Length: 303
Image (cartoon, rainbow, N blue to C red; front, side):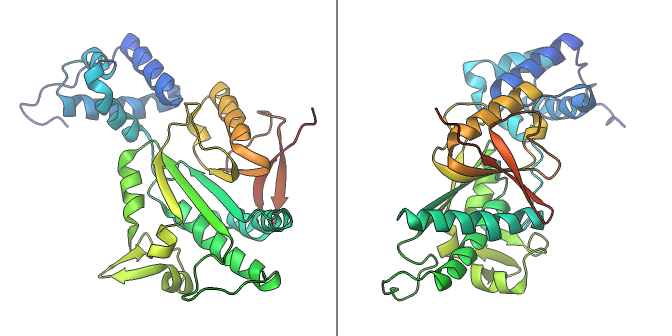
């Protein structure tokens, strides 16, 4: 119901909708078909009112102007649904920790390469990259017990046993969620899926909230990345990009998968959303399936 005295909402014409759809697609690859037009219109109207533009075309002109870059970023933030949680989709995470990391550590130790790099693409407010960090620490501790290196551990004992290094890169298109991830402070409800032992080892209780401990925080590096661009993090052993491809049309999905292929080390792994699949989109990955967990491993093509 409209507020008495409030100006009526501007009408979004078909031509304006096409212009704005094309702009969003060009900027970040997100595709809004007929089923999601209402969502797009709702978010556009919110930002239009915030900017006090008098029409959708005037708002479009602002977005494409040199002065509109900040507003364009705000619009793109409003178009992403930042739904996330700690330890989401346990079967996938078990596959990552018990199979993928185990194989990686074995191969890297044989080559004396003591460095593991994992990229959480579309990291939202940080729960996924911190989860991956916790799982990597535990996997490495267990691996180290069975494959000790002939060197004394320094005191106090580091989170990652030397000479190993683990880097978790966390990226998103939204600056506001990246700031939240960097702060690393979560409410009781956000911590619901984190069990007592993980809370004890990796978080400090601060009032009624939980702060990620310094050692884990230092493993995770937050950065802005737009998956539409070509300038993406290289030399990753594992990429997590879950529930992001569903925003893209098939052509953009194929381009993104090709980019991920180039961003992975030989034999690297890609994890996508539970309801997403690479089948019919590429022949450069083969599916790995264990106990309901699914990932895709990069296929090496002999020249």
